[in-house]
Structures are given as structure tokens and as C-alpha cells.
Length: 618
Image (cartoon, rainbow, N blue to C red; front, top):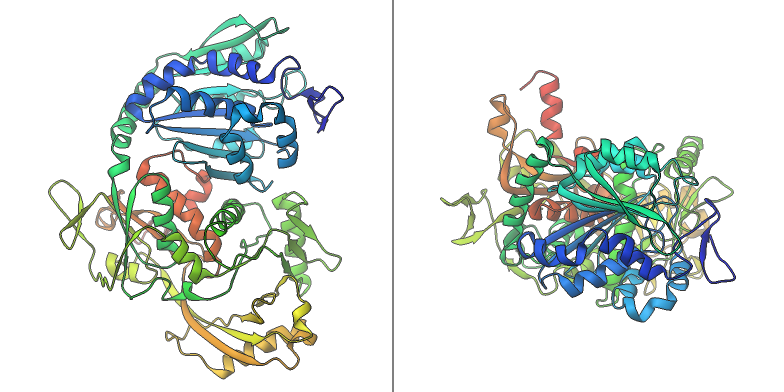
């Protein structure tokens, strides 16, 4: 990509411009806003549904998104939400977006600055950006023909912006796959607009169920296409879902959610629910937040690497980028000891060297964010550390907390289907209390267990003080903070206590010495902390609706209405809990999902039941 002598941004990949040389802002408004009749629809449709969903093929500079935000703020009710979904295979650097749109900066504020402040790492995957109470952006980095199959939009897309580069220069984007999924994802009477008038695009849209018309194009462009979804059986079903969505969203600002658990999983859920206008209340058994495994003073945030690009990899990839954005934003308001100094993952043997090499190849992260060193290790340039304990308290800022709340049984439901805790009524309950979840649900079909781990605190010395990155080698050693390092962590499935031992300190130091003997020499142990991490049978978090276990055991399927889980985040909880929190919020609010369908299936609490049923045991 480059900005040419006339100041216009041009794609070197497709030899095409990003917007009109005449007036890109006016072009965006004419082609996409006016041709989808959006100002009027924002005022009319959002007065009931309170949300409007737009999907775009080709985010580019974000000009269409920013212009849409501007019109939405001017025409939609003040309590309505714009949910904008956009695909981009070749994301631009933030600096290039800022330069390309600088001529309209004042017109596009405050959304222009909000976008730049929240712009995601250029990492393949789904990136949820909450840009204030009225604007939610899902920027999906990757090939639209792959990513759109993973998209889940309850209630459907209300309007489509088809804005890839010209079909003659980028034919792969304008595919039957795209058109087929437009059919699947569209709300009834969904509209579309596109700058092109190519015949095969028109035929593809007609086959997808759209009534396609032509109108004058913008500027020198002779014609363009726009139209609406034709009523069909599928559209009638979507109509029902759309109406339900409107009914559900009408009172979102007053909906109350009980969150059980004051660690990372619970506090992140409360934080995200509040972002979406709900009223969370945290229930914690102890007298303070982060009393368990979330209470360490230093924790490294890393994705869980895998050799292949799988559903699990998609989850951790998106979750890592979300964690970085979240920590960056929160650290501007709260002291959380956020230190994005980089995490170096060492190739400790040939097997790990091979796995890291395949991770680097298959995950496809931009070199700005992931690099390989000469020894076969991986450097995560945006990796770093944070205080989990301080982060929990920052997440829970301005959120009502009930300490000493020893909830030993699942809350009951009243005649209206609401959940009741100590006489207080809630619309939904989120269980985010690690192993306590198993007790509350009273089921053997939630295979989670604890692993005891101890971290060791050591004083920084002349040798270790020079360490300016976090080291990961099966164990880890943090860069120095306030004159000390943290080394961790032991891994003991057999122990169920939180007692520290000198032997575990020595085990941590011995593992460090195996790979970095110079750093391990002469360390002075100044403290230790042991806690119980909860993990699952398949070592993946458990996030989503709670299955109705009685129905499953009777041969049926189904979920318990208004009951959710976010547990078993294990040793990668700093990364997975915030992504899990957004997924829980998506489900409670019935919003477009912030994760791919494959990742959601892997997180689903019912996955264990499906495996048991497949074996014929239920």
C-alpha cells in the first residue's frame, strides 16, 4: 500500500484505489449510506430494535465505518447501538489509516480518534472493538470467503456494504461463497449496496435472494447496484428472530446479571457486561477480589500455541489481541502494572522447535507482532505482563460487589423465570467461580479439576536486572519489576492445598537454570505464592450456556435459560477470560458473536455431553 503523489491511497496488491479521487467521504455516503436508505432506517428501525447490524466486505481505511458512525449518531435514537462487522484480508497499519483520512479528521471525530485508539493488532481472527455505548465494531482479519462461514449473527444483518476492490482486479472476493452466506446471514428485508455493476455480481446477488436494481454511480462511475432481500421462508423465520431481538434489547440498560466469582473470569464478565449497558453484581465468597489463582502480583499474558490453525488457535489468537487492547485501555485509567515488554518463547528441544516453527507458519501473524529468532524461538512483540490482582480490581471498578457471599446452591427461579439470590431478582446468572461451578451444578458431566501451582519471587541482581523481556521455557521468568522477578510455575495435579514449600521454589529455579544458568545463579528467594488453577478434561476453557443436564440424560438436548459458565481457564486465564466474557455478553444480549462458530463449539459446556453421548453412555 502507498499514498501516491495526489494523496490517494492505492493498493499494490490489487493496483486499485481505496476511495474516489474526487471525494472519498461523499462517495461513501452516496454509495453505501444513501443507497441503503440508512439515515431514515436508523431513525425508524432503531426506535424498536435498538440495534442495527451492518456487514462490510473490505474495511480498508475504515472510511465507510466512520461515516456510518457519524450518520448513526445524527439519526438513531440515543440508546440504540450500531453493530458494524467488516472483513479485511490486508489490514492497513494504523499510521497509514491516520494519514489517508487526515483530510476528514475533524468531520469524523470523535469516532476517528476512538478507532485509532482501539485499532487491533494485525493478527488473523475476529476482533471485537467497543467504541463507546453506541458503537461496536467486529473487524475480521482474513479472507472473507473463509471467515464468513464462521460468522454467527442472531437476528441477521440489516445492511450490506460490498466494497472490495473492483471485481476485475479482485475476483476471488466476489464469490458464490460470499453470496450464499449473505443469504444465510441476512435479516428480512436486508439491503445491500455496491459500487460495481458487474453482471456476475448482479446474478450472484439475485441467486442469493436479493431484488437487484441499478442506479447512477458516484462521480465518473456510470452505474452501481443496490437492492433488498426478497421475502422468503427463510426471511420469515429471520423476521421472527428479528422481532424477538427487538423485544429483548428494548430493556437492556436495566437488565441485571449476577456474576458468581471474583477472580479474572468473574470480574472480566462484570466489566464487559457493564460496557454493553447491563447491570452486573459480583458475588465473592471471600472478603476481597482475586483471592484465589487470580491473586498473583505478576502474570504473563500469552496465547496457547498450537502447531496448526485450529478452532483453539482461532480462539487464542483473537483472545490475545483482545487482551492487549483491553490492558492498554485499562492501564490509561488504572494502575495494573501493565508492561508490554515482549515475551520470548524458547525452543527448548527439537520437538518444541518444530512446533514453534509450524505455529509461526500456520498462524500467519504479521511480523510486527510475531517473529522467529535464530534459535527457532518465537518473540511475541506485544506480549508482556500485568498484575492479575490489580486487573481484577480494575475490571470491577464501579461495579457492585457482595463480599462474603457463600453461595452453596444454584439460585432458584421465580414464577417469571427470573433468578433469585437472597430475595434479589436477576435476569441472568454467570457462574465464574472455578471448581465451585461443579458444586453448584451438581453434575458429573462437567469434567474440570484443579492443578496446584507455586510461583517464586526473587530479587533482581546485577545479572538479571538487564533482562528486558519475559522468558518462557515451559516455566517462565518475568523481566524485573520494582526490583524483583517472578519465576513459575510448578504443576501438581495431586495437591489440593495452597501451601508453599522451599522444594517448589527450588524446582522453579532449577527449571530456569536448565535453560538460563547465568540468570539462575545466586538468586535470593524473597517470597512465594501457591494457588489452585482450574482446567478441563481437554485443557480448554468452558464458556457458554449451561446445558440442561436432566434433559440430556433423558435423551433430549437444551440449555438452562439465563444460566452461563465461564470457568476452567487454566494457565492462560489472563488471555482467555476477557474473550470468554465477551462471548457470555453476546449470548445474554443476543448480539452478533465475537468469536468464530468453531471456537464457540470448542468452548461450549455441552461438548462433554456430546462426547459421552457419542460413546453411548447417555
